[in-house]
Length: 212
Image 1 (tube, rainbow, N blue to C red):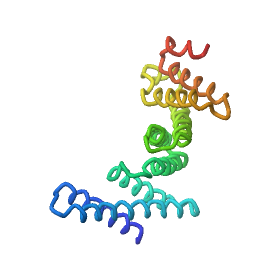
Image 2: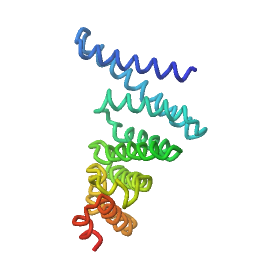
Image 3: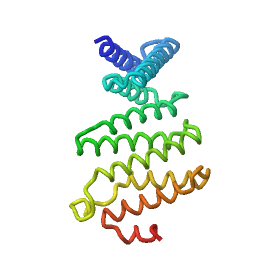
Image 4: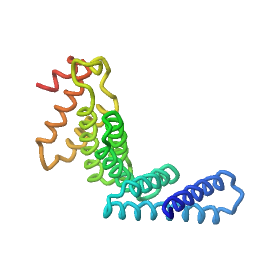
């Protein structure tokens, strides 16, 4: 369809702009113009598709928007709106995970969403409010991973807790300490979630002090 063609054309345009940048065969002004055009068109299309998905909830629009966001972030990581773009991209991944019906795929998709929100939380171009919001949502995504993972007593008990998961919990707690959240009980919830993740992995030594 037209959307498929548009995504393909923008992908080609971004790849071409990157190849020209590496080749250094055009005047600097032309290279800058080419890069800015590719960047602007890709970002605009991603946000337009995102807006259309928000109205229709069509999975195909969500997939295309996420593809263009990822393309934009990989090709133009230093843009001024990279922080907000990471947030919008993560939002689509959250939706994708929440609608996945297959249990194994759902757990994997929640982990992908969690990582995207963690990236947003640590992004230097994200505002302090965006960082704390993303840090919190990352912990919620990781809690969804735990909810879809095998429980204590299964093979999961012998696996160490994910370092990325623990880092997400710690990041939120660190940010919350600097800027106290509206609901202090949330901090308690996240501490409990971290301890529970360690307990599930069989690391009672690390979990018990957090429960206290």
